[in-house]
Amino acid sequence: MILYHGSNQLITKIDLSKSKNFKDFGRGFYLTKDYARAVAMAQRTTAIMGDGSPEVSPFIFNPSRCPSDVRIKIFDGRTAEWALFVLKTGKRTLFIPTSITMTLSSVLLQTHV
Image (cartoon, rainbow, N blue to C red; front, side, top):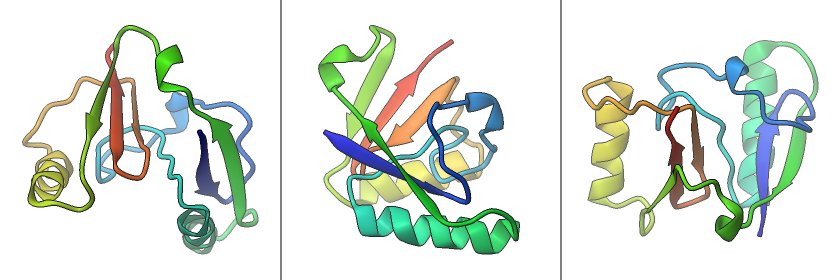
């Protein structure tokens, strides 16, 4: 499955040290299967940062090749469960000890250190 990351620069390798806290799902690296959404995020990020140019970086994701410490949580769209998770994570009332968190449109991956 091909997933996309929108940013103000082309990303060829995921570097979690550049992740920022307090994103919707916590610190992590975000991907979507919706190319148009990645383009919009790239434009938004470039405007906010005032640097670089909008870039969409493609990544190949194969769930069967995930490390054993990766947990997958599937949300069926923007449901009440999804909204509650975003709310708790954004307010830091839900502790998630993750080194990587990726949203795959409606799929959340967490890998623990």
